[in-house]
Image (cartoon, rainbow, N blue to C red; front, side, top):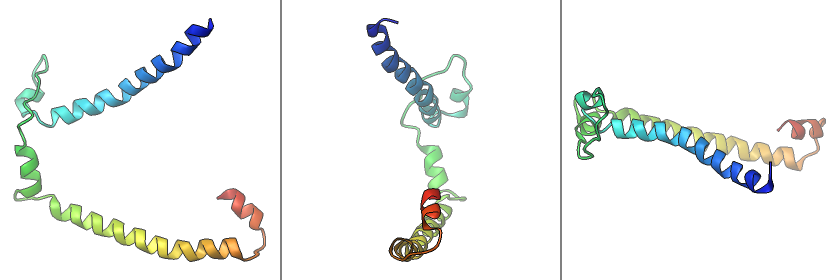
Length: 109
């Protein structure tokens, strides 16, 4: 391969890989704005981005998704705080004090 071909391969391969990753996610996001009939249409139709009825129903309907989301946020926050409160003193102890097999444990982590 000449030098110029080699210099072009990496950006083209990166762009292709990015398109393979991003385009399906974009398709899913755009399909979420479609009605059921629009999502099943062949050929595909462009969604009207003013269709938020499904999102409003999911966040404020009879079976709202907000309480489980708030619960998950609380559990994640408490877990993060407890892990930090345990991890900081443990890291200090491992760094400060001379313990047997310290080099092996630092190699593993």
